[in-house]
Image (cartoon, rainbow, N blue to C red; front, top):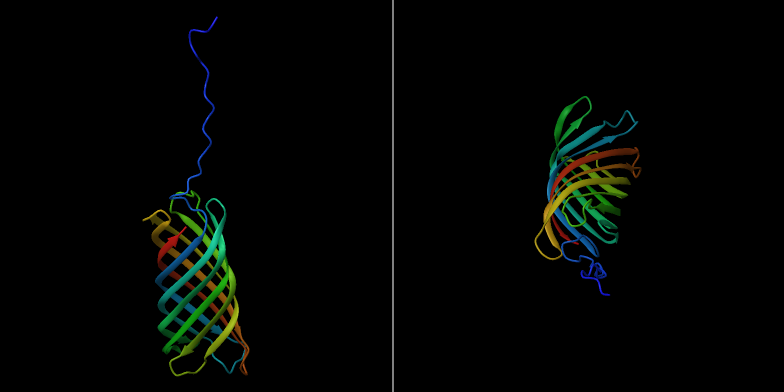
Length: 201
């Protein structure tokens, strides 16, 4: 005798992985912005005054990588930041004129999206650093290398299937050494940048 009501349930359809508006696959991020920075040049020699270059300038970032896990990007990055017409202050002498400076960071990065289909992301880079600082009168020039890092938080909005636009707030820091001259110099660099970002991911 057949039942009056059919209570059988069909097998569920196979799940479909979302490919559009989801942070996965190839990762490419390019950023440009402005920031404020400080480079403190120090030495143990009493014949060489410590001095600081403070000022603002442009920031440029380029990150390329992949996505081994949904919402988690890994790869390599290059970051440039500079100081243009900054203020130079020497120990015991105050403001002694203007100067310039710059920092280059190269190394691996990680960038994570807590929700892979949304724009909020947090990341960091750790790697090799090279930098310089120079007073306007070409005295006390620093050119050194060492280690550096950067950390950022940002948000981007989808403008295409894989493209998004947004902004980042970034902190960078580096510890550099220059032993090319008669006096060994050490540079402690740190800065903040506000960046406009174009992301393909």
